[in-house]
Image 1 (tube, rainbow, N blue to C red):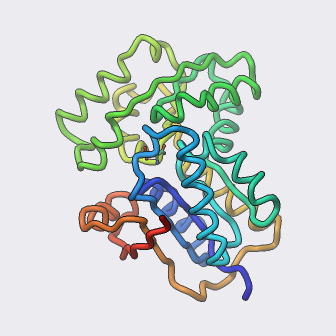
Image 2: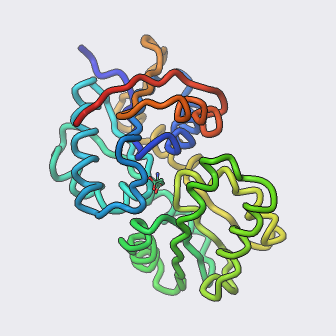
Length: 265
Ligand code: DGL
């Protein structure tokens, strides 16, 4: 059987923001999405736990003949990308969400960049390290912003509660004077406009959804794996199904999708 789908995984349904961008860029491709809702949030897990989950999910995606695996989660991309590449050798190509953001900020060349993300991503220090490697003159300040994920998932992306939480985080001393801000989490594109407004359009606010979709397109083209026609419908799996996950898919994907439970553990 020829390899068909683009495999995409995340700790939950937030990675649907990445899946949505890929589908928009490549509407003729089949998507096979896996959200590890049994183990979310990854942002508060140890690096070892995230690596273990990521390997198991990637095996599942490979068993379903995925031609590429997109790690649509910043926490997993930060701590598990290298181990996935080593573990699966050249059996499949992995695309992570960190590299495109690092390239984008390196070409923007701000004097000072802020990075907001989950605790796991910030603890890995991967963004600051890779940006510094690409351009040592860019000063990087990172801040864990753990309240933003539950705030967005619970539907508080607008209104006073979200204003207060966003003001609290973005007002921190470490983010003073930044010229660019990296939204290094699957959920944050949903509050991008609010953040742009917070900075009165004076700070470049970058998220990786569109650039990751372009990266997927270019990698598939390079390896001659682009589809010209979608043969099989997209599929969306979760490791633990609840109605509230199903309802929240529309927040991240634009419309509700049908989730199937696949307990890998
Ligand atoms: N998907 C995660 C990320 O991008 C956020 C949610 C979680 O902590 O699991 O880091």
